[in-house]
Length: 403
Image (cartoon, rainbow, N blue to C red):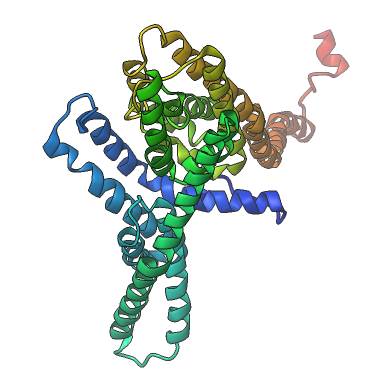
C-alpha cells in the first residue's frame, strides 16, 4: 500500500484528498524504483550518447521503458486495490495502453491498473456468494480473464489514445509558450508534465525539433535546456534528504546520483507524486533556471541525452560553461529552498517524534511510580521490622543517639 511510503493522511479536506491521491500514485511507483534504476543505468551507459555505447545492450532500453515498467506499475496498482487477482488483471489491462500508444504509458498504467483491479473486485463481490461449491477456481479464472481482456481492449481503443492526445496537447502548449517568447512560464507546463512522465514527449516531440532548427541558424539553442535541466530535480531531492520523511531519506542519495550524473530525471518523479504540493518547488526551480539561461545568453549545440550534468557540459559551446553551470546551480538552489519551505523544514517529522514520545509518556510515568515504590519499599520494611521486633531500639530513638 502507499502508506508504506508516506504517512497516513488524516482529514477529509481538499489538501488531504490531494495528498492521499498523491500517496496512492507514489505507492504504484516506489516499489518499482529498482526497475527505474536498472533502466536508467542501461540507458545512461549503452545508448549511442551514453558512456559505453553498445548497440546490442542498448536494445534493452525501448522494451524496458515502453513495456516492462508500465506493466510493473499497472501490476502494483492493481495489487494495491485487490491483492494478487487485482495485480494480474491490472498487468493484463496495462498491456492495452502499452499497445495503444507510441509514448511510454506510465500515466496510462497508473490509471488502468487500479481501475481494472477495482472492476474485478466488484465482480468478485457479486460472484462470491453465487458460485456453487467446486466451481470457484473456474469462475475466478474466467472472470479475471474476461475483465483483464476487456480492459486491455479498452486500453488499446480508448485510454491509450486519450493519454497520447493529452501528451500531444501538452507539447503544443509548450510550443505556444516558446513561440511567444514566454520561456520562463514554460516551466509551469513542463514540470507538471514531467512528473506525469510526459517529459520525453515534450522534449523530443517539441523542444528538440525547434531547438535543432534554432541551433542550425544561431549555433546554439536555449530550447535544449528547458526540460533537461537537472537542477530542479536535484534541489527537490536535497530537500527530501534533509527535511523529508525519515523512511525515505536513505533512498535519496542514490536517486541524486542517478538523476544528476546519470541524467534519468524519472527517478525523482515519485517524490513529487507522494507530496503533490512539491510541484511548486520544481516549477520555481525550472523557471529560475530558464531565467538565468536567458540573462546569461546560455545555449546548447545539441540536446543533452541523457539530461545529466556531464551531457550538459558535453554539448555546451566553448565559452558557455559558466552560463550553463549558473542555470543549474540557481535552479537547484531555488527548488531546494521552496521544497524545504513546503516540507516545513522537517517540522512534520519532529512533530511525529514528539507525538510518539507523548504516546509513550504514560508508560514512563508508570515506570517512574513503580521505581519510586521500589525505592520506598525497603524503608517501609525496615520501619515495620523495627516496630514489630521486641527489644529493638529504633535508629532515630534518643537511646540510639546517646549510644
